[in-house]
Image (cartoon, rainbow, N blue to C red):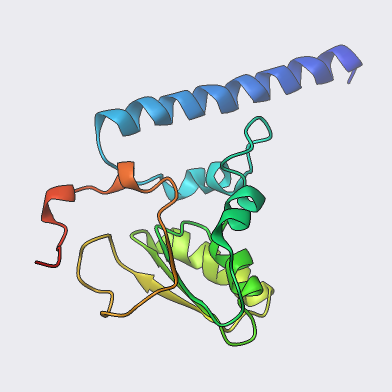
Amino acid sequence: MTTPVNILIGLVGLILLIVLLAFAWRFASNRASIPCPVWLRWLVEFDNPFTGINRTSAILQHLDLRPGMKVLDLGCGPGRLAIPIAEQLRPNGEVVAVDIQAGMLRRAQAKAQAAKLNNIHFLHAGAGEGKLAPTQFDRVLLVTVLGEIVDRTSIKRDP
C-alpha cells in the first residue's frame, strides 16, 4: 500500500542516491582525469536548481550570441548548451560540437534532429587531438571539461 510516508521515504532515498552518485563521481574525477560516463549523462543534462551560475540560461546570457556567429562547444556532452546555442544562431550561424564520447554525441545528435537543427556539426574527438580543422570561432565553450582532459601535457599549442 502506498502511503504518503512511503512516498516521502522513496523520495528521500532517491535524493540521497543522487547526492551519493554526485559525490562519488566528484571524488573519482578528482583522482583521475576521466570524462563523465555516458550512463550519467542525465546529471549533465540536469540544471542544478541550487546554483545559478552554471545553469544553461545563465551561461547563454553571458555569451552575447547573435545570429551568424560560429561557436565551438568543446566537450559538448549530451548537447545541454550546443542545442540552445544552435537555436539562437539561426538562420546562418554554426555550432561545432566536439566530444570524446560517441554516446554523448549520439544523444546530442538526437536532440538536434528532434529540434530540426541543421546548423550544428558533430565531431568525435578529444581536446588537443588535432582533429579540429584550423578555423576561427566567435565563441568557444569549455564547460565542466578541463578536469576531464585525460592528457593535458600532449595538447597541441601554437608556437
